[in-house]
Length: 234
Image (cartoon, rainbow, N blue to C red; front, side, top):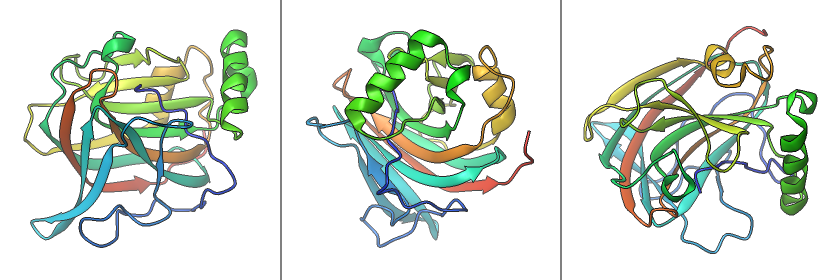
């Protein structure tokens, strides 16, 4: 399931800045980064392990018929710019964001926005409340994910097959090559959710993830130098 409706409950460690990936080699990044899976998840968890490449810290992201995200809670930050480097060494050959059966990604970077509930269409608002009752914690009303998926034209906005509360911006070049990414979060939010609101909400969290539970495939990717540049309130 490619959808990321991560609960931001009382156990979250809230931060005022985006912390870099840090920790011992072959371990998961340290708090405030925390694993976020599905409620009562029984399928395997996507693996996130720190490593070094050319003297710099990189995060290895490996999915194998699995699901999982690394989530970094933030304290109501105005949307700014988000930049990173990523590389996919083993893509998911049968992934297809157009339907639920193929709704997997080898690598994604997601931004969770605190969009007001009155901006959410009525039916989706009720579905969101139902999901919150199952999670027993608040859920973001708008999540924007940058998905590594070169099968789409660069920058295509694609609603998630499970929930329109999550929308992708597709990107990605050839596999096994580092790609530098620098995104204006406010502009991308308006492109993705502008049909519902023209006001850019504050950001509640950033996440990195990969999943292959729908396709049963496996993928290998790396991400590094994830950095936040603050922006003005809009």
